[in-house]
Length: 327
Image (cartoon, rainbow, N blue to C red; front, top):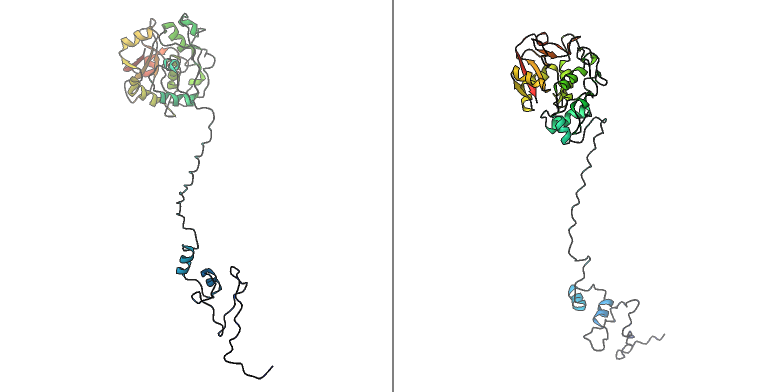
């Protein structure tokens, strides 16, 4: 190398110009002695985009808007759609455990209401039947006589088949029944006789001073189609409660409080008549019978040995009584 200093008038060679439209793989870093050409300078061929690309300075917001016409954002500017709030479904109700098949789900039809012509409404009758089980009842054709529902005559001493169950929560299914509109004195007496009060273990006293007279009256009234309730609101009635029901509620259920002469006329026609003491402290009940030649009143009651046909005074202890008839 020659030690001769360079000629100041001699210009250094110009750097090679890049081809138009070809982006260099690595942007040349301008040195202090080689200034970067500007687009305003003559001879510059860089576009605005290439100028910004090769520049180490980040493009400004104004430059981006001038080149692309929009401002880029880091996320989508589409409107937000509200997400509906999902409510948790309510828990399904727990099904109660099925009880034993003692519940009557169907309401009584027209025929059953006629057979149970005691004035009970559907709710009370459904409650009663739910506990007792709906006992089948006999029906008659139009050309049949009343006696055809009896089938056989009973003597009042030997109970009919199916009426001796000692479980008082079970209704009996008596073979002799006297239907509303076709009653007679003979049928009435036969209905009473089939239960053999005084000889039927079903009506034996629960204890001394605790007779089952109300159970006997319940059975007779069911066979007569005008049931005196033994269950109300799912609760079994006692003798005292049955007597109170006769005095306070029976007249709202088809029963009539009558005088003695009227009651005797009704039993001669075959209609059911019930006797209770007038004294509210006495809790006794019996079924009135026709006189049939007797001077004193005769009743049927759950009295041992003589219950089917016994003196009313012996049962009630008084002649001051009240009488109720269902015709």
